[in-house]
Length: 243
Image (cartoon, rainbow, N blue to C red):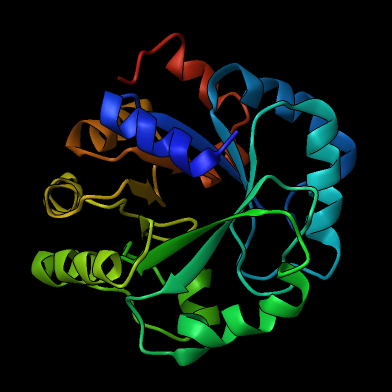
């Protein structure tokens, strides 16, 4: 499957997609099977990554996932070491909301010696950190400031600049464990600005928040902490038709 083309096709058809984000440092590989069984019932993708992950842990988690799911496994790396050729695709992230060159381009350059020999589908993604009401691990590790949710114009302009710079996706991120998820007004404004698919994640802990993000224009919603804290979170969605 060409994952990016699938996202494009679904966005054009109004079909909404759900990704469950698993942090390799927070998931026990030995207990992965029952978790994946729950994910298989509702999600479209499994994203794998975290702000700080020990060497080799990402690959172990991806290996375990591939034993128990047919869903695409997409790397969502916090740094250049979080790679695995067993995954299906990589969100090649650039933190375009920050002024730290380490996460704008340097981490990406460091990944190339290993990445160029992998057969991953590489999806260039503009990553925009939005203030979620708490200092998140992404903010600490990247040493960048999130954009205020009040500054919708700057968020929208940053997203469009990412598109003009050649990004294939824009990812609005409130950060893992965010108190406040990205507002519907921000999502709606950014979606109206872009011609490329929009991913939204961070702080989404309820079915209502998830559906509101979709209604506002998110093409893909990412749920991480809510699933970590309650593996039955997906049961609340029942047979909801997101489209």
